[in-house]
Amino acid sequence: MKFISRHYKKMKIAYIKVAALAIMIAAFFLPHYQKLESTGENIFVISLNGQEVGIVGDLDKIDSCLINARRQIAGESDEMVLADSNITYEGQEVLWGKIDDESVITDHMADVLRGSIKETLNRSYTVKINEYTVNLSSTEEVLALLQASLVKYDTEKEYYVDLVMDPDRELNVLTTAIYAKEEAEEEQSMMVSAGIEAELDDLFASVEPDYEKDFSDYELGLQKIGFGDTVEVVEAYLQDYEITSLQDAIEEVTKDQEKEQIYEVVSGDTLSQIAERNELTLEALIAMNDTIENENSTIRVGDELIITVPEPELSVERTEEVYYEEDYEAEIIYVDNDDWYTTQTKTLQEPSAGHRIVVADVSYRNKEEINREILKEEITYEAVPKIVERGTKIPPTYIKPISGGRLSSGFGRRNAPTRGASTYHKGIDWATPTGTAVMASSAGTVVKAGWGSGYGYVVYINHADGRQTRYGHLSKVLVSTGQTVSQGQKIALSGNTGVSTGPHVHFEILINGSQVNPMGYLN
Image: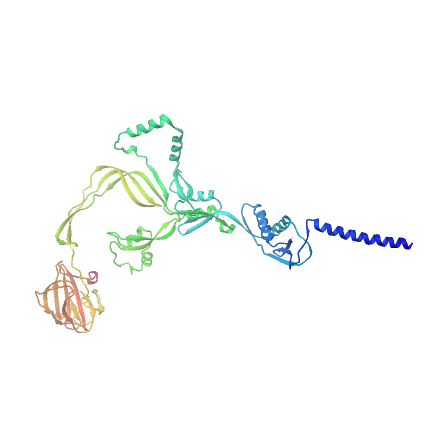
């Protein structure tokens, strides 16, 4: 019995040894377990966004697994997908360790990323027109938007727009090209025809004689159309809320916006005419321009004014061939007179309108005509031109006769300030201390220098353009009758003589013997 017990114990020990040996052998050959060197942390538990996804023995494998996981979820959508990917790991030092296969870790990572998708970016297209941008979901919508701008003026839909690579840009930027449908069809037809037929067409075209077109030979209507602004289109990846619907985009791009432009004043312009012509109120025009104080401000030919005009975000420029009949005016004929000043004119012949029939190319930017070229004209009856004789000499200029001073009385009706003074003031007064230098407003000849009754001491000067200036209430006269003076020359000192309430200079300008408001003539 004792012999059996001892034998049993030996067999049990042997069994345990064999089992241990088998476990050790299996550890060497099983794929997910391996003997690890004792060099510090040699096995790593990997977590993605706080969730455990596997165990690796080499940290370099983490990046490749994450890249493959991203590829896996990216392949599940046609759009760009963004997902958080915060990798953490915990290292351990072990003798034996279970290592997960890379494909398993990749699948686990993909599962975590699917639950961590932050947003999906849609492939879209950004359209840039000057400083304006709009985002659309496809090139089809981009083309529909651009075509909507054309169709306002191309009602017969003879032209179509396409997107082409911009040759002036290094990056992949699209721009627009506009084609006539008829030309495209003709080009395709020409490609079909070949050989002798094409050569004969070219031969007949080269020998066809030139002849003057009749009105019936012109093909009236739209001749050319294009965009007046540069259009750039680039591909982008955007969120849903950043993409505009096609209908809203068309509304934004084609409706008129108030845009500032520069208007150059031409001969005959007035502020009210400029405002009316550009659909503005006079008050709005004045508010836009710091150089205009009020409705009576002077404007000159060549002055530049800010105006607003209604224009869409995307402007369309086009040329139309049109037929019309009209009354017309002949150009004015001028006859120069070197003995006259430029302010002098005389009409030698009154005009009368003529009549003509016309074919012309008229160019527009949106609704505004910008050019007109007459192609054929037939006069029904000639216009009679207006003939005007005009002076060529530059007229004298007039300056304020004193430096400084305070305007104390203007031109026109007033309450008489003192006994003996007129209720209608025929000049203007500047209050200034007695003894202030008084200068000739313009070059001329002194015709009076001395006492002038109510004006006190005065100086009268006749000028080359037939005008006369007068200076009153002087304290001292420094010139004499018949003397020639230059503009700005000192002629007297200011004072308080005659009917006067205080030291000042009284100044008049007379044209044809009658006083006018000097403020309208001083430079």
